[in-house]
Length: 179
Image (cartoon, rainbow, N blue to C red; front, top):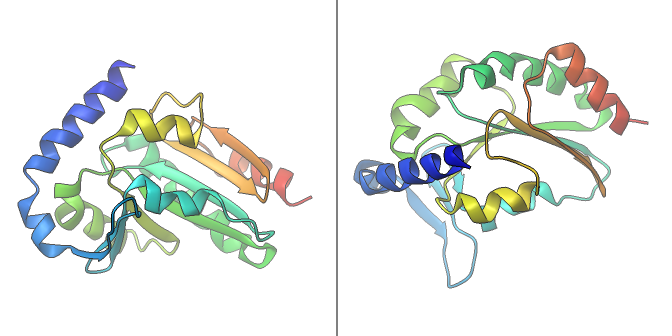
């Protein structure tokens, strides 16, 4: 719980210092009670209401949704395994989505260069919603808020993992959804 409170505090502080990122971002959709989606050149940025659609698709595809950040060493270490999985299983209707929890003021200086330098092929979106105590339990009621965290789902079948993966352990989990 202390980690979650610390992350919320850091997000609030970083949001206050985020004038440059705000100037670079363009609001794509915003109306009262509507989800917020912004773009910062080539990065899609969502609040949780806008992001939630990525957790609710029901089209017989297997979705692998990985929550990570550039400052999280275990997250960065496992990213190539997710990339490999996405490439090797794309013909079996598997799609990988990386959800960055990086601080908004670091999108331009850290996140976007990281995506480019690592040649990330899977879709990457940024989740910018400081109300973590509200949205974390909506992702999974048992999630402490630590990362890396991953959801694998297909239609109504879903499994949540608050752990790091090797390629082999990730492949074992994905095969459960391909039966």
